[in-house]
Image (cartoon, rainbow, N blue to C red; front, side, top):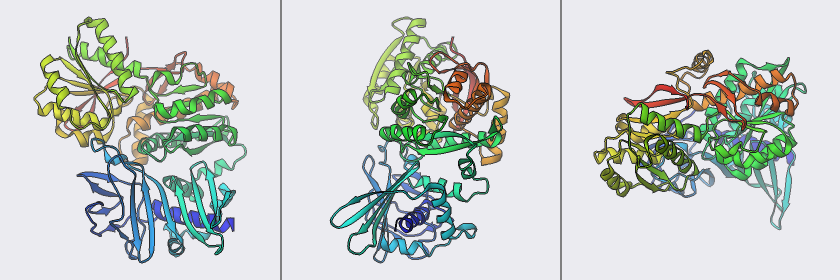
Length: 561
């Protein structure tokens, strides 16, 4: 029974993760749901939302989006589709506040019934891939072990693997599948590619001689979009350097679901069960802080792509980062404001609910005061993530008349704040941190961002700092058909740093790799030339970026003095 249940799981997970071509959704729905759904996207509250799945050919076969569902900011969100008595619910990560971009929402779960499972067995996937062979490949690669939970009415089979979890409920009397719930369905598409692509990483994973490297990223949940960019960079780097020490490199993708507990648990699984020699990721300081103790305890090195909080690597010789720290960018932004923008006074607006924002503001203020005097910070105010009205703070700020304004925080909140500041007639240059390096920042802020808005960035294609940066940009554009962003560059550098360390160590022993990483000096990456300091943080230049006519344009590379 286990095998047939697992095959059913695979089949349905692929239906809803979009293996067939996207279809137009012509159905009109009620006010509680989006007015249209087509080609991976719909419009909600006037903003475009892009989801990582399609409905295959379900629309053509009579499935319809219903009014039974909720897409309310800050609450649990789900869509419901129905055909006659068949029904499926598609769960989304809780949508952010109305002031934040909806484009980050991500499918985190799917629940469907027996009728839907029977329907899925009739579908044909692209490239004439047969369901039977697909399931066979998946079972051969990932196994079929399951835990069980018994109740009076049903048996629950729980399948857990690196990229997600499945729960299959079977009726105690009928011996029929009654409900299947699949978590992290975006990962199913990655599994599908691994099991079917001729350039599959599965081949490397099954190669007993391959060097196994974990990729611990939030492939689902709130940070999924950034994680995908990270992995694009890693994937590109692996295609350019697929071997080291004469052995293939196998990347084992592991989804932490943008959850701290999951980040800890999956890190444990990677190093203790999968026996990886090192780990790439995770994205964000929050997830890195949750998983870093695992790497210290198990003595396996890891390189985070975007954990900028200075404390993440302190007192942990096994945890490194490819990005600069908040301390670094806070100092550099203050120096840029004074030396390049001629600022003698500054105002600070900080997000009290964000350690990132508070830390950056503290460093900016300290640096500014050290060089311009204790009275140089003429105004300070705060807000909280999700706030939409910044009028009180901005009206008071106008009275202080600062030369520059510093307000690092979530790109959605800050874009709204900048719009309101410009509407009030505030013309002072506005500076922020690396979180603004996101296309949705431009969408939300619009024309208001074209008026002296600057932020710190890890990478900008318009200002390559090394020959490797030019090689990276060319290869990325050829592979993906678009210009790379900072997260892709950081993912690329993380992979290249690790492979370089393995090569210099002439060993795959985790301790030898850690020592080689610590000795890294003058490494030329896509984000610049770097060396690691005693805390595993890179010493390198930071790029100041300005919004010009709706485009991110690099101004200069700014080393901290």
